[in-house]
Image (cartoon, rainbow, N blue to C red; front, side, top):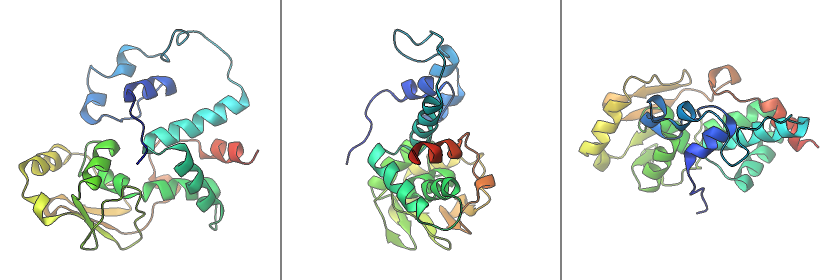
Length: 208
């Protein structure tokens, strides 16, 4: 499976804001954006005017990095969103939020989407009682995502859920951390998604 293997803090610096890709580190003094709030590279501190295309590209790149997906998969999601009824940009974000790794993160079973992705790959989760180890699996309304029975007994998993107990689950799911499960009450609306994403710029980019 293809994935980005470089330094994730560089991605935050490139976008000029915290993308919260490394869990607890993002909230502390070691955060790269807090220490060096400029783009990486020799010309990172230089000023330059950003074109309309540049703004659209940055919106797409930032969204990809939030969710940890690569170009080909992101393009596939855009095509799916375009063929659904409603606004394409909102459909795109709803699809991205429906990924199993994102749901596990949102439910408080992981400290970051990257960590959630690894946990999914290593068979730590079930959907409606069946093991699913595909991070890109798209959940549906009514689905129940849970930590597998074997993993619930793990001290590491218990500590992980406890560490994230203070982070509230989004309104579109019911997260029962005590029982290591979360139910998808409904798929999210745009106002339910708290990420700083300008999806209309992504639509403009793909519409060229």
